[in-house]
Length: 466
Ligand SMILES: *Cc1c(COP(=O)(O)O)cnc(C)c1O
Image 1 (cartoon, rainbow, N blue to C red):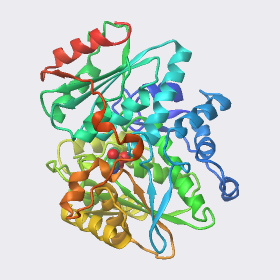
Image 2: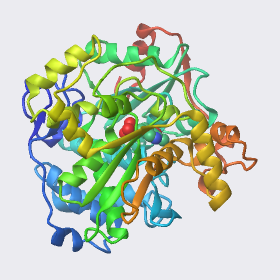
Image 3: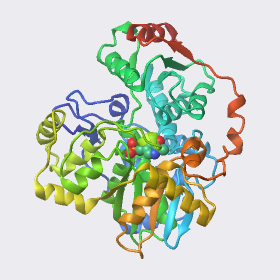
């Protein structure tokens, strides 16, 4: 399978190169040139498969040029055996025909483990084959950093440096990063804010001379195609568990960078019967404003109780815009260059098509808390604030009560105790038993000044073969 850029100018690449590349050289994102399509009969024949086996069926067409079948199977078995539930992505019923898919049974208790546990293994596999080494450099305000570190802890050919803003991430989130031991794992606390961290990463990617040409940087942010690919699988898993593909499903997805819900859109294009996809946002609602009024406009960032969805623009939305524009890279390039300067709209018929594909809703902090409280009082089930936004949006946007509605449960409630407290509940969310000693584990991180040369100097000195 070949991958092409959403801006139409960068060269097409194979899977291995797409895995190791972040942005395309023209500033676009890579997408498959064409998608595999599965018939209803074929999908039906997957009933009863384990998660890892299903993952193999869904993903193999994307990687087959790069990885032999048996190696990929083995990788998937390892990847999903570290999850703390036999079903990997279990469903919990909330109400008649309404469900939450718990995607937080991985090592860092958020859905990002599904992709990053696999990404680490894929990277190491390809690097071993090529006899190469990479340095992963990333900035995090929480979930991505810990999932990336966990995903890379056993990689031989990868050093990972994660920058977080000193004293500005929650203690659970910090400890999930800093208590992972490994010679290739480096946590840097920058005396600045998240934007400072991100700026340093961007600058370093732009000029990698500080590495002396001996290794290269790689990115694990949500624009990496392999992450999207891994997220397609659980849509199939949920459908098969509830009678699909012989009935259609609806999904509601707590959305930030549009990666997770874009995977649902791809599942549908690959043949899975999905009749509704709900984009659920918090007050950072650029996507909801676009879907309801055909105006794509950046607003000031708002800090909410659902910090993993606090974004100003959704980077993966570019991948949808590419399809909405008939895969015309020049049109996407033009649109996004204009969008960087001010509000933009797309042609009415294209926007109407988008509205057929997606519903949307924006949920504020108060309604998030009300939802957490309501579900707990009725079901004794605790939602994390991101999932609560999904559940609320699902209920507000539901079109057909006979179609099962599945909200993606993106994080474990113990990761976000502030929102639970804010909702007025006295119950305290408990960390799962395998993490109960998180607060006793030894932490390792380095505090550095808010200076790119200091950070780059640290990386140059501390990667494996430096
Ligand atoms: C990253 C994240 C999201 C947003 O996912 P996107 O793929 O960026 O849309 C939602 N909830 C949680 C808990 C997350 O960590």
